[in-house]
Image: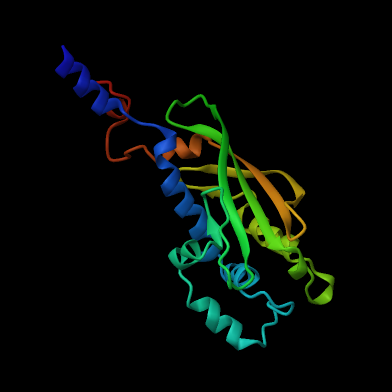
Length: 207
């Protein structure tokens, strides 16, 4: 009896939570790789701390951000999913985007759960100001929102804007909290249908 139960568990074991690592990668790739030229502008805002970081004539900025892969950006804490910021003694001023998954709720399809995805955009307050009256955290928020709002991401669902509010962590750090609800639809179910099978076999019906 134990062996049978164990086999059933192995066959049926599945959870939304075990796919979060893959979902993170999907989001970061969409933001930082797949949405050029906006991906490059977002990288400039995070990596280059000068007020003219978006100036297209500054070719050295482009060369610098080209050196950073997604892994490099995670290793250097520009992007992260662990809710902790660490600061080196002589570290260059950076901007950060911690990513959070929260408030999971069931859907009609037990294979999926809706959730809230949050981006805590954090910048050193002395480096908020940019050229043309722009504010760095709101510029970052603008590119994140422009790329992701209304976008349907495989395995995650459609991201719909939920809200934005200003963050002040202390006298040195502050930014913007962006929140999206990720909802699943029939289109997500269709991705997992094998169209090479007869319709009755897809639903487990024989004859």
